[in-house]
Length: 250
Image (tube, rainbow, N blue to C red):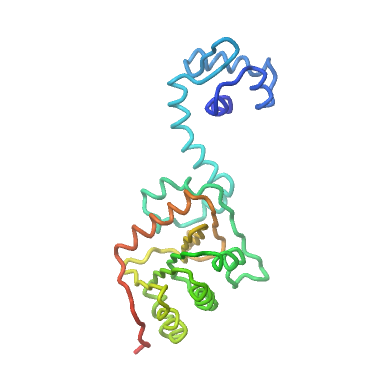
């Protein structure tokens, strides 16, 4: 597998292969012979390269390897998540999260918004967020971002809307009155605490299998992850209603 992946980058001679893979001639030659016999690699003079069949196999192998890497890097996290909120066509492309970071909760700051999220929101020029778990400092953070000129689209669950009406009405209406902020109510709310995508990072919170939010989150700066999250909003945004003002609870 490693030899196929190496040759996918371009042709190599034996010495280059040994150096790149940190192997000996004795250990690698049987592998080369086997791959030749299956018509996966070819040799012209001293140079080894992939055949058409070899390139096809590697092309189809890469998505599997990328998905495996995503899971294996933090297997305990991924095997304990509830994925009901992620549409099947997007879950099959979970590899698009790319080189992500798992944010583990600090026991001394368990109930604060994560520093990685708080530090990156003010640097963003456009922000799209769905939230069903409303942190007390969430609105003030977005007020600052909006005041700094960021274009904001907020998607709320029905329970979040009721929480705002009860506890944060004046502050939230101030946010809505800013010309660069749009607020939507999701008629079909995904079962997810929060998902955010900006012009340069995405932040994903998932419930665990018990339906609890344990403050273990994913952050990624890869372009593929931003595209993935935008598609998530495209999926749920079609069933949302824009709100222009929120009245108090009756």
